[in-house]
Image (cartoon, rainbow, N blue to C red; front, side, top):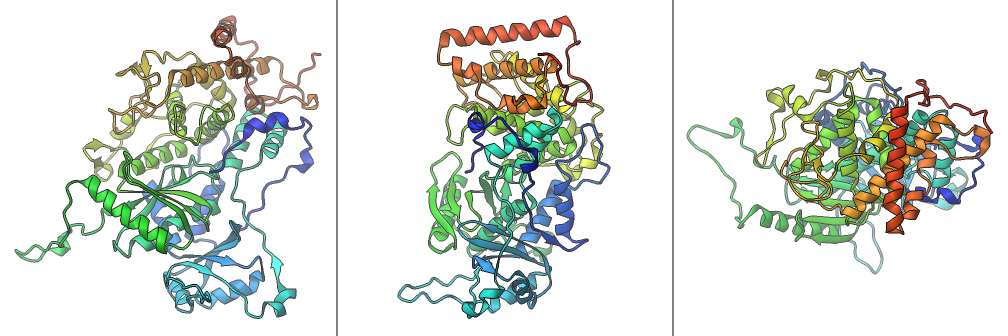
Amino acid sequence: MAACSVGLLTRLSLRVQRSQVQRPLRRLLSCPGTVAAGLRREEQSSGSAETGSEDRTPKKRFSEVQNERREQAQRTVLIHCPDKINEKKFLKFLSQHGPINSHFFYESFGLYAAVEFCQKESVTSLQNITRTPSLGPEAAIPFKSRYLNLKLRNSLNQTSELSSIQCSNQSSPSSKKLYQLLCCAESVDDQLNTLLREFQLTEENTRLRYLTCSLIEDVAAAYFPDCAVRPFGSSVNSFGKLGCDLDMFLDLDEIGKFTAQKTSGNFLMEFQVKNVPSERVATQKILSVIGECLDQFGPGCVGVQRILNARCPLVRFSHQASGFQCDLTTNNRIALKSSELLYMYGALDSRVRALVFSVRCWARAHSLTSSIPGAWITNFSLTMMVIFFLQRRSPPILPTLDYLKTLADAEDKCIIEGHNCTFVGDLNRIKPSRNTETLELLLKEFFEYFGNFAFNKNSINIRQGREQNKPESSPLHIQNPFETSLNVSKNVSQSQLQKFVDLARESAWILHQEGKDRPSPSSNQPWGLAALLLPSVANNMSLSKKKKKPASERIKNLLDSIKSSGAENSTATNGRRAISTQA
């Protein structure tokens, strides 16, 4: 899993050459008016809206986006290509089987092409002329999938026609490039939006995630026809960054679902099935078989681990062709509902995703989060904290979950395992916020809010959008929005929470100081978000427990004195960089 090694910024030269900063090249051909073209336009506009702007374009339901993406993936093939290839001839060859809707190339243990046809029948036609390779002394296990391998006939005679392919970017920017981009920004708001654009999942990466799920579904369908493998979590909730893991679940709910069309007179037909003691045992048996199948027969699936005794049994594996680390569970519908809720919050206001990405990057830079399980704050917990903070603004930027429930109709009603997961699914029924605060102000206020939050007695609850008394003694309590008896941050230790508070106070102080005396572009000093990603003074002092708490308290007192003395030194409302004339 790719990590944002922002802490390395301190090793970089502070001199920035603006002319060297370039946007990564992307390659995607889409037919106008198609689903792919529409989804691409939606992705391109997701990180470019100005603060407070209202997008009047009708917004799609989460379920509509998922269904369109899934259908798109079912019309797509994944082809391992030679390092050099004639792109026009390659596409002409594939077009014999039907019109191509879109395609792109990328690199992951070789060169790959993801090619989407306009009809599923074209995929079948291509499969029908594809052969099983002969491997000499080794034996090939015949498996008919949509993951193919392209070889050139008489490649020596085609050398002059071959060329290197321009590949789409599938990784987050380096620390050096990120630093350059942030220092070239015009304002803190621009910095946050720049970070969002650089780290968010690209259109191609999103399509590749759905395609990977579709390829795994082909394997599972051999045992469970009519099943679906659906992505959830960061891959679909609009908060995923390039390099994040791919979480997916095997959806078996549609298999044998009772409908009126299946009844006839007084007779009722049922499938013959095997019975097991509990649903957990059934899950373990299903995942055991699917894991074995992926390990033995799944092309490109390596390092398969069946982790069946975990609280939530799963199969973990690497998909070499896509480069994703994958976790497969079964019937995890509450997790998908949580993904839908985050998707909605991210779509309601352009500032939400920019703020979440920046807070997560800040936390990663200071080792507040980690890819290794432990006592650290998770990205999900940080996202809940940002949402809660935005619910507490005046006027609120985001509505509470209880309010979203009042807007729901009969179609939205959803009860999963006894938990009420009902909320409105139509984004167009939610009125946009009247709040016009800048991202710079929100970032500063976020750090100040949680730097002074009474974690010792209050819990965070996005369902009601207000502080509540903690129901348990955990250092940090964030109520699960659907399974309300659960604390999503129960793993966080007191020391890690205190580290978060100290860093939040220090970051608020840095932003307050910059509001008074921001460095000029020629000063070669980091500023704004770039300054927050550098190693922390409080973090260095944390080696000494005696010094750490007083330093944090001093920063808190200074912030309080600044707020009480007036707003004469606050940042200008237009958010543009103020160049200091002082020595």
